[in-house]
Image 1 (cartoon, rainbow, N blue to C red):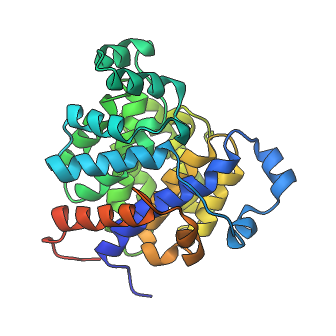
Image 2: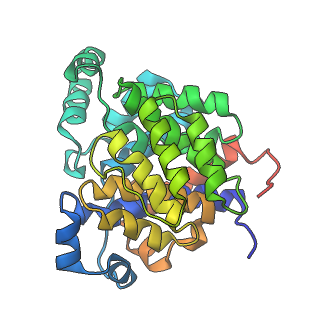
Length: 314
């Protein structure tokens, strides 16, 4: 099978994120035991999905990162904050902390002080990681620029080293995968281990590399970045050739299902391209203002602005 084009990987990444987010959203907060008892096989359920699905704050904030990159060609923290504020819809399931920050932005208050003081030492949640995919796409062939842009994007809301590292790691994973023809888990884990800046993530990727891709390992599936980011990545490494199996694993773990499935779906889409996402799932993703077609357009625009002039080696 031929590798997908770079453009199709861009589209697969962003739409894979949105679909994973939307499919995972109804299960958020449920335990893995409850999900298995009440719903059985998630992959079978996804295969017969016949309801409209809607993305959450994960995708809405990802859209803001896209819009900032397309307008500024880099992460301008103040402009990114404005994008977040303009897109903010409280009904999308935002966490209490980021809600307070976004509401402060709307009231033109000192939101930067709130980011610094709301969580002692800064937030180490997975919010920066869940929205960073566009940076992994835009700077896929420049690891130094990718790191600095991912860090800047994270610091708008997350100042803790774990929250920042989680964002850098997801962006880096995406940059690796859109350039990969044949996935090798050992090489991938070793590269991820070298990217990690914090001891916690270094240990997690070392452990995952020792166990290999055949054994699913969960470091947690909850809100903290170090309790969900590596887990989302291993959901992909266990099923690198199946988008449905990747997001099904993420959802079946329970807890922060939308975010874990969003990150896992972004990775799967970046590697497999848009054609790996079942058509019925794309069709069920709610359209309209800033819906499915808008996300697809953002992916195409990111490709045009950041990648179209590069040789398509994939």
